[in-house]
Amino acid sequence: MHETTTMRAKWTVMLKIVFPILITQIALYLMSFFDVLMSSKYSTADLAGVSIGSSIWLPVYTGLSGILLSITPIVAQFVGAKRQKEATFSVQQGFYVAIVLAIIIFGLLMAGINPLLNAMTLEPEVQRIAHDYLIAMSFGLIPLFVYSVLRCFIDALGKTRISMFITLLATPVNIFFNYLLIFGKFGFPELGGVGSGVASAITYWIICAVAIVITMKGQPFKNFKLYASWPKIHFAKWLEICKIGVPIGLSIFAETSIFSVVAIMMSNYSTAVIGAHQIAMNFASLTYMMPLSIAMGATILVGFEVGAKRFKDARIYSYISVVTAVIFSFISATILIFFREQIAGVYSTDPQVLSLATQFLIYAAFFQLSDAIQAPVQGALRGYKDVTITFIMAMISYWVIGLPLGYVIANYTDLGPFGYWIGLISGLTAGAITLSFRLIIVQRKAKKESQETSSIAL
Image (tube, rainbow, N blue to C red):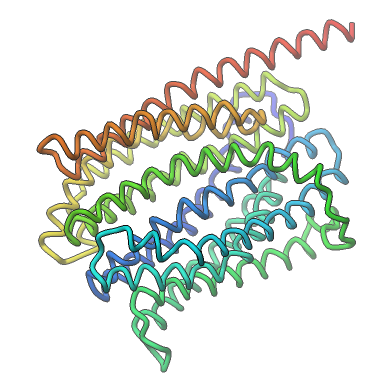
């Protein structure tokens, strides 16, 4: 990364950073996409089981691994300030934190899967598939979390194409093992939807190994000497990582878990409703990859500029990110509305599932604008290391506004399961508005501090 002086140069740098992140996020998403898609081709029960399992897995993984996202602004600011040794030390301590988190999550999953699934009104076969899927996925936790740290390090240096390359390798590997293990091809056991969980765990080990080799031997990563010597555990650095990362992780958990809670509440409806809801949510997650990628790019760029004390440039990158995401949201919403029948048809041939999915996809289209604002705004705030207030706002938006409103509409009006989607849209909108105001406050504070520092220097 480098300093830019014109708006055109900033757009160019942002797109160079964001495009590889987008490809990376889509590749990661495609692993979940093909888990659901290929399981749906096996049976409706496997579709429902994997849907429930992934709805539990996603918030647990994204929320706790979100703690590791603090590595990105920490390293980006150190690199911007030309403090390489401190960046290396932060990444190494991040490895330790990642392994501890993975062990904790593994223990929680082992202890909590059965009570959680027993609390749902699931068909026995759907419950079995969800249980075994989660067990299989959990054996990939350690490599997945270690890779998350490495990816944050790689991205913080602006080398997002490397992350893209690694993750693109993961998609065909995951599809290949899905094919072998879901359908029992070439002598492999026929595991149905559970096979997709085994395939994902195998894939996580492979991409982690590839990332280690690249950061060990490739430029500019080997200059940081991540593996030359291992420092002792430094709890003060753990505290810094967690002080920034925990609010980030909790914010992500607040957002992703509400979708999972809705999916669990959908278990009170028929298997067809569960499947149709998951189809719409799965495709909406794909369109979300663009604003999410822009948000991750905003964290890198804003963090780099803040580290270099160029607060005006940081503010400009924030605005560019939001504008780009909003433009994309109108395009994706149009696609969802006009091609919803074709989209649903990719996932299932069940007439009842298709009919419901086309209706859910209409609501998914309205997600787009709120997501296009709140995601890049959150990314920019992380670049400033402003995370605690962001977490509180997210909790209020999703859990105080979104979920209760959705529950009331779903259970006390004729809209039924569609009411939950109205609640989700309301929560996302509230989040977009409040986070935007927070970003303006943080930017004004940074500008004021910069002016005071300049006056003292003079």
